[in-house]
Image (tube, rainbow, N blue to C red; front, side, top):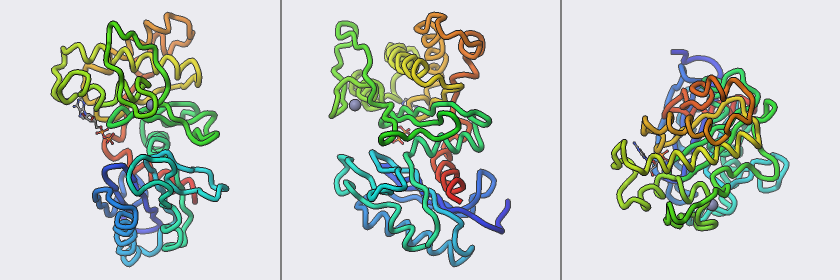
Length: 300
Ligand code: ADP
Ligand code: ZN
């Protein structure tokens, strides 16, 4: 392990926990800590304390990357850059994450969504190496997506909200109304882990592999991917998050994507090589913190 030389600091700022680490990449994670997400002052204070210890050992970081839950402001020229914006999470509305880190360590701070961070980590070290156009979608407590178009992370007006795209909903076949507080039966409202659990009356991870839940889940995910493929023309789609831990789900999604596209998108990647077109993340459970490292590297 390389424990000398320049390093970056990374924060995976999640709605339930923060993971902070220093290092330079997958083979050089020098220190790591995690703690629950409570109030902003307390949680950011814990992050600052951890990084101060690392500065004593390794000197100042070359840059700091923060991959955070949102909605957030990732626009570096905006007055509210580096803040969480309209979250329903108590106390976190307008919370400034980038400001206190920059003030404490004087290093450049990169700030983006957790999914854009994970996407950039996969691009640098994982399943999206060499690609200029790809999507990273996570299906967990929520559904979120990011990725690259033309070699740049997707931003735009604010940042993509792929979890909240509308889906066709046959209320006879599936009367479950969805649980998104904003839209009801959007993708996240219908297909995130808690929606699966609520629809079937037991936690998603307890449903057996042959339960009808998984065919329905694959149906909604494939509809969403059909929309993303037709809109963004990604060269690959990475599907992560706790729900994708179900090993039978990935092949079902691939098959339904092919079926729903119905031969229209004329690419061998979809028609012949779907197994390497829709793939799991390569960085596994380190994707979050390595994503934050990747954001930091980009800021140097
Ligand atoms: P988060 O989205 O909070 O970062 P995860 O990606 O781990 O966390 O997603 C958590 C969600 O994934 C929960 O709703 C949980 O029910 C679901 N989940 C976790 N493991 C499994 C599993 N093996 N099978 C199906 N669902 C799972
Ligand atoms: Zn929604």
